[in-house]
Image (cartoon, rainbow, N blue to C red; front, side, top):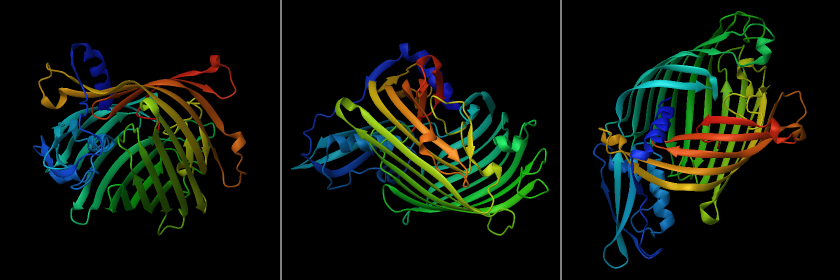
Length: 442
């Protein structure tokens, strides 16, 4: 969407910008404790929105690692274009933390231009209207429509703290989309068809700590196909209409969510599809674990393991799991794998080429776009995974795998662009593929 535009804008204009390096901290490590915290620049954002992302509370020991961690956590709120924390010695062993921020543009119409399923042949476009920080409470309210591939209309409301004292999360989404069928089994050699989906979902949750969130989501889906053949829906008339219930646990200690250099991310979910219907009645368990370990010279080793397993009655084809769409195996980037179950692993080594810093675009008339954070990493990666059906034996030695190298560019507004070269495992380099993608792979 707008991220691809920001990547191009920054890349083309960087030669005209004034570079500002990320400040170096000169205070002695592990010498001071936090006395007070002062927030500067949060003209709209409530201070507690920032405070709740910080590990440095009054009385905590100040270290360089903790300061940098909090800078990245605050930046991960996606409310600010620039974040800096200064340590100012006070009396005795106490120091004042000054959190300096520059807020993003919160309320704006925006053009939509993007790719679906990480495939540049599937382009969609449209318009939207968003407010990403209603009343300064980090409340997101936006609506959008898209044309082209998989046209859609959606309205979203996300309130991370509808009850501040008890830290209760609430969100609502309603949507209509004409989604192109992904299942090779449903297509069965015929002309492809659309799944017309109308639905809504309501989610409530509780944030138990800085790193832990538990949610419960109730979802309704009305799905019918544009060309009804046997097997494309569970009901014979080509329309499945059902409720689902999803319970999820999230544990996330990552410093920078869009491209972490430290921490652990764990998500565990249990879903029940079909609450009161006879046609749809199955369950799914999903686990996703990610780990980021900094080593010498700021080199980061990252890994991901994930799986999604289904049980119960018949699984609809549109409820299958896939590689080749949102999930990819580099080296087999365009290979479509379909099944009822899925498992995969990814490993990356990130080697800094340009460490995080800022450029200042004085010619831009809007203050919210003048400071741009960017970085560049060289990456080594390896991926593996497969899908299978419940009746199939699990054969890990038959999984698809690949490896390669790439350059990862981090830019403003949480945008990440990647250019990579992936090779299928066991094949010559001449059979490798060039990959252009948006967003971090893990």
